[in-house]
Length: 272
Image 1 (cartoon, rainbow, N blue to C red):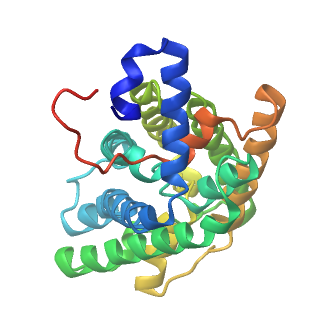
Image 2 (cartoon, rainbow, N blue to C red; image 1 turned 45 degrees about the horizontal axis):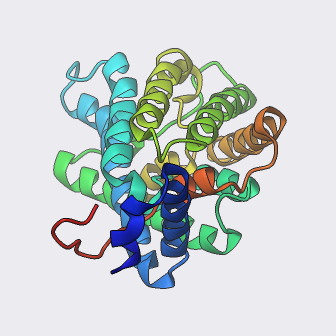
């Protein structure tokens, strides 16, 4: 009889602890890393397609996409990605989220560069796709400091918005693998709300690759430092706030939420 078949004979706490052990062993398996990197690339591609595509589509078809729709759509997309792919890679979709999880000891620093590269690649591919299909410059899908406001004002806005976003992500990650739908709604809802009030000044990027991909394809880098430095500073502050609220990270639940877990084996009939 296999260990999995014996699970029903042990208590609920023992089964929970064994499941956590299996997840940790799984996301430490280097043979699964390609799945996680593909998940990050694909998820970021979908996110940037919506986030940058809204502005580009509105330029191609004036009045087709309102500002409210343009900022709510990425939140809905992130919610969907967390629900259908969060347990593969953790659904970071954002370099500063990967860095924040690493600062919290919920994600290995050794895996951060590959995650960021996958996210950058997904964002760039999305921008190339949008330019080819919509046939307008990806600059219309990027973010820039508002006219009449300084780069510094946009920086502070990006810092504040990202600090809130990463705080929500780190907070829901402490139990997201058990109540994942709550985490998806929390993160997606925050992105939509932050965009509704914060986008007029900075665009509410909260994600370096969300701006980098369209900027790279259009070779337009106005205020580029804002969208790297602002989200990074906000994420570092959020990691510090999480330490104040919940102590040091590195627990099994939050690590599992940050890294994802895969059950790729085919279950036999009758197994739980």
